[in-house]
Image (cartoon, rainbow, N blue to C red; front, side):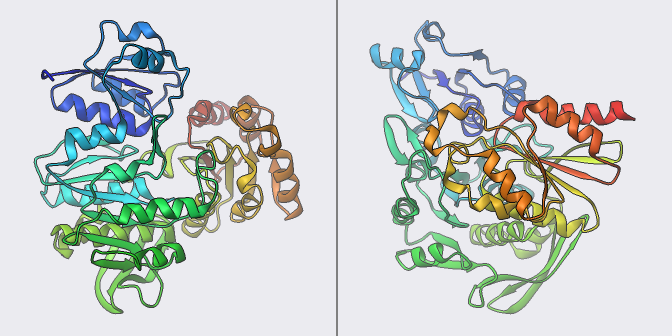
Length: 469
C-alpha cells in the first residue's frame, strides 16, 4: 500500500473512532469521515485537527475511492457507504483491527477494561506516564480536561487503550479488546451490559476470559479484588496478577479515605502496610478504585511511587465524567456519561459525599442500547437514592428497542415516587429546562446523565438559569 494513505472512517464521531482518526492523521495519512450524529466534544476535536467530516452517509463520500475504509461498530448493513465498500471490494477494517495493524505490534499496550471506569482509569494512567516523561501513546474514549484530544502518538513504548467488550463491527462480532495485544491488562469490574449483543453476563465473562488468555507471562493483570466475577476470572490467568480494592486480601488498597469539595485523600496500602499518602481531585469510591488500578499499572510500567503521587494531584479530570459545565444563578451544572444504574448510583454517591448539604438534582436520559430496554428497569429504582430531585427524560430513539422490551419511564417514575422521591418526567428537553429554571435554587447541583449529547441540554439549562437572574 502507498503511504500516505487516504483513509475514510464511517461513523467517525464516536469517541474511539474520533480518536483513531487523530492518531491516523498523526502518522501522515489523509483522513476523512462521515457520521449522522455530530456533536461535541468529538466534533470539536476533529475540527481542530482539520479532519473533514461529512454530515450523513452517502456513497458519493467514497469518490474518489479511498485506499482504506474503517467501519465503526455503529454501522449496520444497509448503510449506503458500507454497502458501497462491499460492492466495490474496497479494502476495509474494523476500528480495533486498524489500531492493531497501524499502532500496536511495535509497542507495549496497556489495556483498561471493565463495565465502568475505563475512560477515567485510562486517562489517569496516561496523565501519570506523561508527567513521568514516558511519552506514551494513547487512545481514550473521552478527552481529559485541558487536552486538545484523547489521542496521541508518542515516542515511548507504552500504548494505552480502553478495552471495550462491545463487538468490533457488523462483520466481526468478537469483543474489541481481543484485538489489542495486551501487555498490561486492567480489569475494573464485570457487570451485565450491552443487551443488544450479549444475552447474559456469562457471555460477557467468556469474552473477558478470552481476553486474559492473551496477556503474556512477562506482562501483568491488575484486577479488582472487590468484584466476584473478576476474582473468579483471575484464577484462570497464566500471567502474574496484582489485585486492588477494599477486600481484606487485596494487595493494593485505600485506607483512611477523606472526601472534600476539592477531592479525595487516602492512605495507600500494600498488603496492609501503609505506603504513602495520596490525593486526587476526584469524588467517589469508584474513582478511588480507578486510581488504585492506575497506580498498579503505572508502577508496573516503571514509574516510581513519588512521581505517581505527584501526578495524581494534578489530574485534570475527563470531559463528560462529572464535568462542571458552568454555574449560573448559584446553581452548578454537571455533565456525566453515566447510563448504567451502577454508574448512576456511584456518581451520585460521590457527589453527595463531597457536598452533603447541597440539594442534588439527577436528570437522566435513557439512551444507550441497553438502557432503552427493560434490562435494568428494576435496578434503576435504587440508583437515584442519593438525589434529592429526579428528572427522567423520554427514552431516546425508543423505536430501536422492541416494544415489549422497552424501558418504561412511567414505571420508573411510579416506583421512585413510591420510595418517597420527588420525581418528574417532562415530555421533552424544553420542558425539562423550564422545570429546572423554575424550581432550582442557589446552592443546587444539577447532574445531567446520558451517554449522548442530550440535545445540548447543559448549555440550554445554563442559559435559562442566567436569564432567570
